[in-house]
Image (cartoon, rainbow, N blue to C red):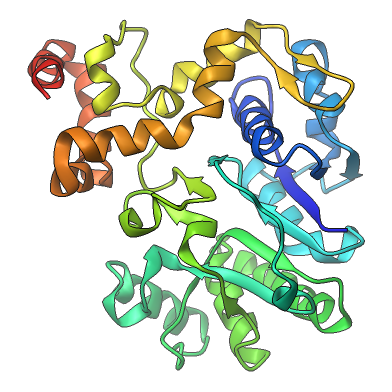
Length: 336
């Protein structure tokens, strides 16, 4: 049996708990028999009360690690992610929480025994927009110059429960701790170096298993996991978002979609399916359609612009500083 694993570090001040609940709800829609595991830390676990307690009911297995109380939330999150293979038994498909599952995640038989992930930005390193940054970080840390031209995105990873996989994750954790000692708490460089030290053990998943929305348009139609990180979740600062803005800001990318959920009771059914209300259930079940809608109405090039980091930052800035300038986009949305 493959487990579907999420890692959570959260407090009442953020919306990561709600984001994880939405991700699990989408998983249950398309994979009703999925065995869901949540790995979290002691501080986060102590906050899972009230409406946040629904997350504990939504999973089949809950693992809590006691971590150094001085760790920042970022350190706690990366710590859990790099040790997950060695504290969770069984094969698992790990997924970040800034996602929507939109398809069948049954694991192909040929993956069994291996470690799989999707290339970062869906491309080889020599074509990646962050190539110089990646290579400079590796050089600064004394790591390999990434000779196989592949950097994997850690947002979705399949890891078999084998000694080799456990050794790989142990090395990843060791290298991440080294990075922390160098005031570089991120996990991508250490993942790449662990892959180098294990003779490039990580194999490539098809892109639809981690469709990084800002860069993976070709994988969207068959996308199984939509990864929002490149599109960013935008704070509309309390401003009402008209329906015409769905073209530019699908509901699942609005910060209010998660923060409003803090005050909504969530029902976990006996079969572990999740019911919030008609609005939320519909958005979660039809997440892919919202992004296909962009492509149909804005065109392929237009959708690329809309999903870019630059557009997301600009839209967020307008909502925060000059919301009146969002009006032209509203009008354009009505036309398109």
